[in-house]
Image 1 (cartoon, rainbow, N blue to C red):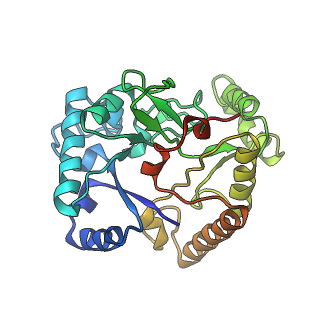
Image 2 (cartoon, one colour):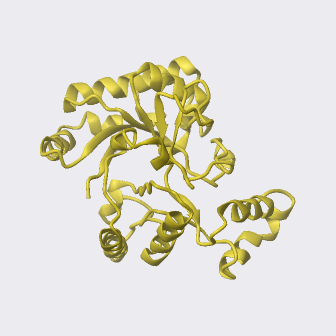
Image 3 (cartoon, rainbow, N blue to C red):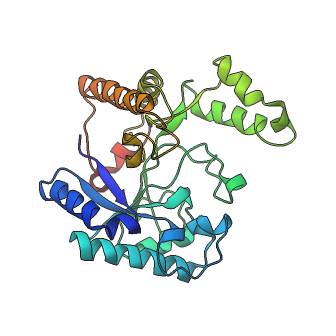
Length: 284
């Protein structure tokens, strides 16, 4: 497996983290990308608020300055020009895409399909699918065959075969006035609509494998697993509070990777997705 490490500013400026990442990268066993958290990336001049924890809510010029600081720190400390990017808390927008273009990025991976972050002051991705696509920085959410950038969404889908239908049902029951009835939970327990992340932090190995099979059956060519690296150590994130949680996460990850190997799924860096032929990015 060849991971892409999306690096925050504190990581890029920490001596021990830099030494570890450089050692891995120097053996060509990983890609180093950028992951911008507004609250810990200079310049720190914005109001400290939940809304401004989303990069997309900052003025475009301040977005650029933070992204530039992070980009320069990675180049200076790790000796790598990152080309892959994810907004912290998935705070993505067309302004962010334009700034990525200005800074020479080529792959963006902030979209979480079928997820609405508006209650957290973030974007609404419920109209997005898990399909990777080329796009222009002038329209971050519309496919453009001659676009210079490649979007590789985090893989979020459903255990049901018809993703569009499942998404439409979920959107209906999770918005006012039906939200208070908690119908989404009922549909989940009845196995009628089951949204799944390809992430060992949030999903069982069985659910991730079922999702991957559905993705393949639906013609999707790219799977994008994600998790926070601190979750590999108990007590650092809400996903692995105990050593038992930590062991379970490793087990889920191992079981999925065995499935991927046995199924012939190829591991690749985010940056490599941009080199795939256009047909390989498109669901049939």
